[in-house]
Image 1 (cartoon, rainbow, N blue to C red):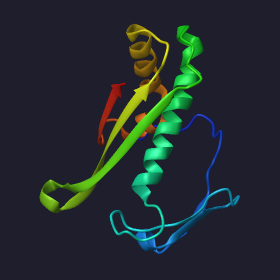
Image 2 (image 1 turned 135 degrees about the horizontal axis):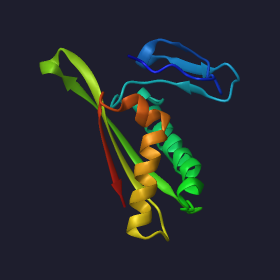
Image 3 (image 1 turned 90 degrees about the vertical axis):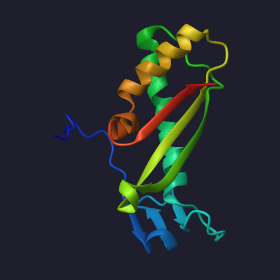
Image 4 (image 1 turned 90 degrees about the horizontal axis):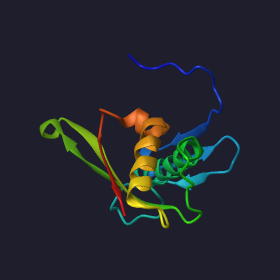
Length: 141
């Protein structure tokens, strides 16, 4: 059963046409992108690239949210190298994605890094949305 929001803090709105050979634009105009299929060589981005950036940004935000609660300061130069893979599942009957996040936390000891990443993974909206649905691999670089 899906969890319901207790309160809506923000709603993103976008209009997309043409699928992977189309375009997408947010209602506020902050994002306006041409879309192209992965590996096509055509100009534009694809949903997997957008997901990779979105998940990484969200995860850094989650670390910043939980850091003060567990007395771990998130370094100013925190970074995540993310990858989102696309491929067939169920013998080709469907498609799925898999995510890898390589998290760099300079200046923290190994225990602090693990504590911060584990806590963030429990509260990150992307982690909660994907948990149990896709393969997500977190590594501390």
